[in-house]
Image 1 (spheres, rainbow, N blue to C red):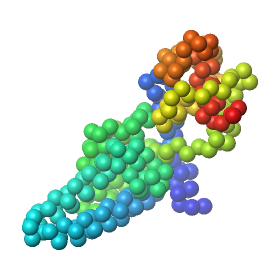
Image 2 (image 1 turned 30 degrees about the vertical axis):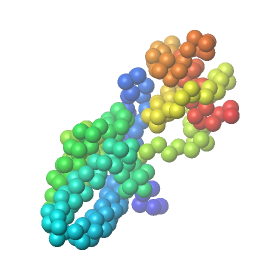
Image 3 (image 1 turned 90 degrees about the vertical axis):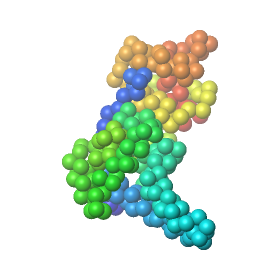
Image 4 (image 1 turned 45 degrees about the horizontal axis):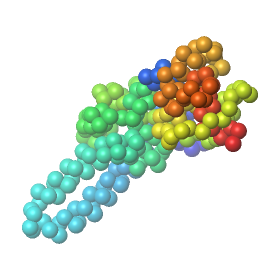
Length: 245
């Protein structure tokens, strides 16, 4: 068994709830996966700095050495923030390991939260010993380091379910049609729709329609469909899972 596989087996699930009241699970990434991701990011950012410094050194006689220190500052403080904010919570290292930084409800990490968690990386890696990060992560059920606690963020495994996996975990009622979404859906919307379909058998029809009413409208449900809100979302889920296509 690989280190990554054994690390996943020790991870625990965290329940998240969307503003629409639909619950789904997040899988926090453990110490090993995050350490490898951080190592990859360190190598990449180091390579960027080395190449950039070599180029800037050629013009240092004109601009002065301060330009190199400014470049070092930008790489140190904004490498992670830039990728997390504009890259869907995924730096190159996190992308390599299938990880993502999110808010506690699973929504994309905000710029302020990303900046705070990365500013406190200095405290987590004090004197480059990483002992504070190690202690806080191992003592936390969801593997948060100090920066994550302060910013209210989580590092989780990104959804990588295959069509077969999603189909196997959902009990599809025979009367549910397959409905193609009327617009492109975000990753979070797809997760929410599939999470609703997984929970549907335990909700009951009345509760399912209560939860789905407002959300189905935002996803394109109209009177022309002549469908209950829960049926509409289940139909979208069937399409996302590749059932009936």
